Amino acid sequence: MIVLGIESSCDETAAAVVSDGHQILSSVVASQVAVHHPYGGVVPELASRKHIEAIVPVVNDAIADAGITADQIDGVAVTQGPGLVGSLLVGFSFAKGFAYGHGIPWIGVDHLEGHVNSVFLTPDPPTFPFVALLVSGGHTSIYHVTAHRAFHPMGQTRDDAAGEAYDKVAKMLGLGYPGGVVIDRLAAQGDPSKVFFTRPFLDKNQFDFSFSGIKSAVSRYIQTHPETDQEDHANIAAGFQAAVVEVLSHKIIRAALEKGCRHLAVVGGVAANQGLRKVVSRDAAEAGITVHIPSLDLCGDNAAMVAVVGYHRLKAGEHAGMDDDVYSRIKFRPGR
Ligand code: KG4
Ligand code: ZN
Image (cartoon, rainbow, N blue to C red; front, side, top):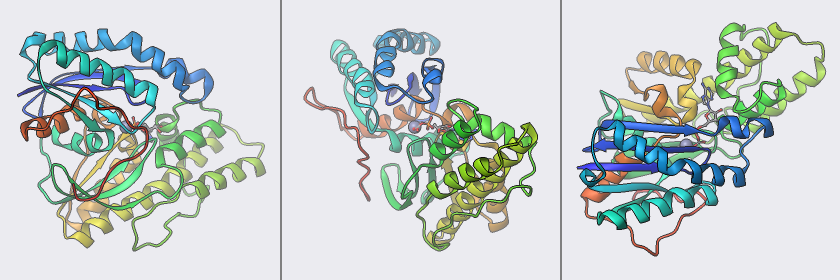
C-alpha cells in the first residue's frame, strides 16, 4: 500500500511517499527557519502563509522523487493535531481535497503518534513492547508502547519541553532560533565540569520532567557572570546539555527496566542531539537494553512518520470524513 503523508503542524511543510508503512520512497521537508529566525520563534500567521505557498510544490516533489504518479497513491495520511491551527489547516484541507479528487481514502494522524512511529522507518525497528522517549520542541514524554497504536503515557514534562529549554538557553546566549542544534554543537566544544547545573530529576523513580528550573539557573548564571567569552559560553552549553541529557537518559532507562522492556526508542527533534544519542546508547548498553533512534532527518518534523501511522489505520479500514477538523491541543489518550 502506497501512502502519501503530509505534515504542516508547525514551521515545516513536509510530504512523503511511504510503501507498506516502512519503506520511504521519498521525503521532502521545506523548512521555514529563515522566515521565523528574525523573530526568535515561530510566528503563527507567517507560518500559515508559508505553508500555503509550499504545500503544492512540496507534494509534487514528493511524488516525483518517489518515481510514481499521483494515481498510484492508495491513501493519504495528514497531521490533524496538535499544532498551530492555521498551519494544520493548510495540510489538512489539502489532504481532504487531494483524496477527494483522486477518489482515495484519507486519515488524520496525531503528530505525537507520528513521532513515536518514526522508529519503524529505521532499518532495525524495535519489537513490542518497548518504551519511547518523545523529546521535541513542544513535548517531552515517556510512553509504554505495546502495539503500533497502543500508547500508555508513563510521564511528561510539567512545564517546558526539553527542546523549548534548548531554544530558550540558545536565545539567552544570543545564538538565535531554533537553538537546539547550535547548543549541541557548542556543547561539544565545552567542558561540562566547568559549570554545574543541578539535575532536575524531581523524583528519580517517577517519569515526569521539569525543565523550567534549569533554564532559570542558566539565566541566573549568565546574569551573575556578565564577562563571559566564547569559551565560557561553550562551557555553559556543555553544563546545561550534560544536566538535561543525564535526566532524560536516566528516566527512559528506568522506564524500560520498570516495564521489563528490552527495547527503547528516542524520537522527536531533540533525539537528533549528539550528546543524548551517545549517553542513552552507553547507559542502555550497560543495562542490556537495545536503543532505537531514527536518523537525523527523521527526528525533526517530517511526513514519512505520518504516513507510517496512516498506513496502519487505513489498513485497519479507518478513514476520515469531510466534516473532520484539526485540533490544536494534545489529545493523546492512553491505551488506544
Ligand atoms: O520534533 P520537532 O522538529 O518539532 C516539534 O514537534 O516540536 O522538534 C523541534 C525541537 C526544537 O526545540 C529544536 O531546538 C530541537 O528540537 N532540536 C534539538 C536538536 N535539533 C533540534 N535540540 C537539541 N539538540 C539538537 N541537535
Ligand atoms: Zn514534532
